[in-house]
Image 1: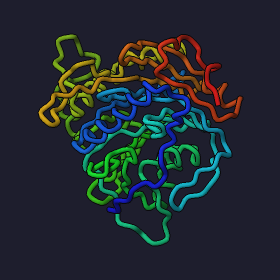
Image 2 (image 1 turned 120 degrees about the vertical axis):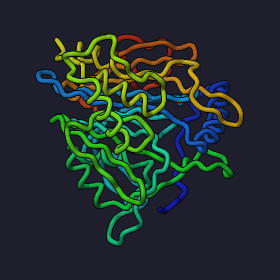
Image 3 (image 1 turned 45 degrees about the horizontal axis):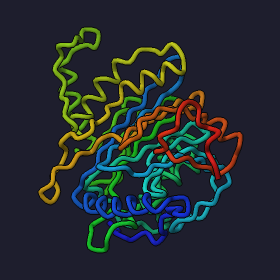
Image 4 (image 1 turned 45 degrees about the vertical axis):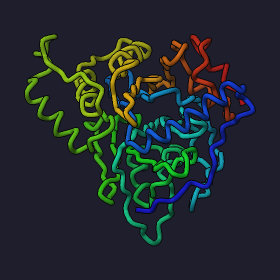
Length: 361
C-alpha cells in the first residue's frame, strides 16, 4: 500500500466565511483529525429499485460536529487533474462535499450514483506498472465525471492504481489516512460495493448489494444479514414483535437499514418515493454514545440525510445540526440545464422548499 500525502490543499473558500465560522471550522478540523486517527466515523447508504418510479438512493452523513457540507454542481467539460489523471469530465454531476472539498455523495447526468463511507483497515493493492495512479480521496469525483454506469465505473477502476492518501487538514502527528469503501448505483437498478482490504480491490456487483454502512467489512455484513434474515422468515409475516438490533454501530445500522429497506412498497409518486426513502434510512440520534477517545465519550449524530431519484433528477435534504433543522428540495435537472459550476451552503438555517435558484458561483 502506498501512503502518500495529497499535495492539493482543500479550497476552503474562506473569503465567504466570517471570522466566527473560520474559527469553528478550523478547530473542528483539528479535532476531526484526532478522531479520524482513532478510526471513528459513521454513515449509512441504501439504494432502492422501484417498478414504476426508477431508482432511489438514500444516505446519511454522521459526524461528531458539522462537516460544513456544501452541495455543488460540476458541469461536463470541467478539468479533473490529480496524480496521473488529467482529463475533462464527460458528465456533469451533483455532489455533496465536506470540509471544503471532500466529496462524499454524488450523482451524474448519466444516472450513476456513488457514495463513499468510512471503512477502517483500508489497504489498497501494490502499484502495477501501466496503470495510472489516483488518490482514494479523489476517486469518487473521477468516476462521477467519466462513467455512465456501475459496470463502466468498475472497468475504469481496474485500470487504476488507487492509493491511500492523507486528509490535508490534520496535524502532522496525526494518522489521517483516508480509509473508504464505495457504494455505486445506476438508473438500471445495478449496484456494486467496492472495498480495498488485504491489499486487494474487492467488488460485490449486483442489484442485491444495496445497503452499506461502515465496519466490519462487507462480507461480514452480508453474513450477519443472512443469519438474521433466515431467522426473520418471509417479510410478509413480519410484525412489530420482530426483534431488530437498534444500536448505532456499523453492524447494527447495516441490519436496521436492510430491515427497513426491504419492507418498502412501490411509491405512489416520485415525491412519495423520497418520503419513503427518507423515512427508512437510519439516522443516528444526537448525543447517542458512540466511541471513547482520550477518555471522552463522543457522539456521532447524523448531520444530514439526502435522497436522490435517479429517474427524474431531484434530491431532498434533511439537515439537522446545532441550531439548524431544515428540509429542502434540489432540482438537479435544472442545475444540469444551467450548466454552471455552482454551490450551496447546506447548513443555512433559512433553507426551505425548492432551493435550486439559491445555488451560486
